[in-house]
Length: 478
Image (cartoon, rainbow, N blue to C red; front, side):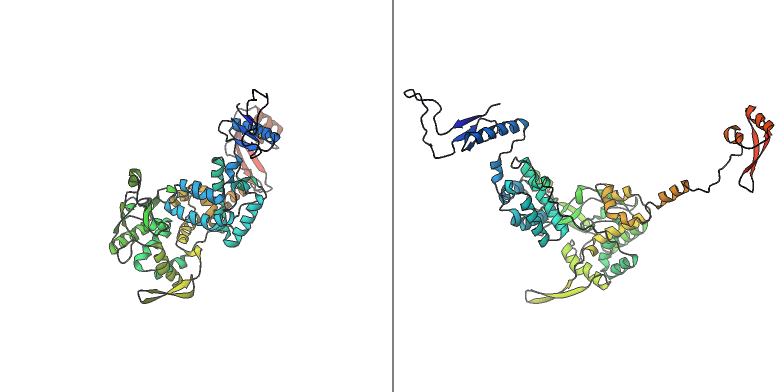
């Protein structure tokens, strides 16, 4: 394979007059020995020939294997790599990109942004992890660490790093959230909260509880998504907002549409809701609210019209922040689920508005209805595979990880069956008509009769259990 070392201080060919190599114009002004000629590898200079020879051998071997990474490419700082190379190449949906960007710019760049990629070692990661856990909860730190690992994976693919530092350093463990079991509401809590909601919003609670919908999926439902005759609801979209507060429609989480069975009583409530609160048509961009810049983006983001089954009293789409603060949380307070911890004053155009401040309780937000739906299904003995499909999970394993504690009877049926197998005091059952063979010949009978039984091809017997637990056998026909 090509590759050689060049002496930059001396000319390549000797002088015709002296027979010696003359000095170049850079004599003593730079590193003397330069490695050149390796395909796909940038030239590199060294002070000594031994360093040049060692690097040449390593570079040639790694290049042949396709594993060569030039350390100079790792001199770029983490912040520069993120801002100029990694982030501009991302193609995430707005609902994913906004929180991801917030975590990276607010935590990763302040903590590690000034460090060169190649200098991110175990010590730097341990310091970053300790400071991260002092700033955010473990659950958020876990997500931020995943983002950091993804960035380093990209740097490895871009040939800026040989290995991902988040994976090679065994002494640095990623942050892990404290495992919390999903919470489900009891029937009394559900009824109390539903009663406190405005009448037009009670159907939103029915959708979360009766279909296991996420909040965005419930707010994005079209009246045509209800097939009342077939008793099924087609979950085809959700209503989302980008970081600038612009609404748009997109596929449900994971890009996975699904069909969820509709119970007869929920179908009755749906008909009643459609009658009392007619659906409102809403036209919004698909996937991304940004103005398209190409013909392809224009087709991908073409606005769609949806007849929303849930709307405000002014006939508009529901804004999740407004709904949470002015409808959902006040209903929780009235039902005794939440408490108010203060009050804030807002002034608009000379008017003053006093708004209560509620205690933080993420586990009692709209998503708790989805957990309650899962708990009811599992306690009724529904298949975990079917439930996973109705919830829109990518696999039944995710459903089990979230809701296994809602299956208190799991394993008891199998335990009872095995216990029956191992029961010691079971009586052996003897068929009424049986061949003579093994068990008959083991009985204590008259030798002459026993010989007749052994020589007979078929034997008819009558038997009964004795008081001592034995069997009394009478030979009827041989």
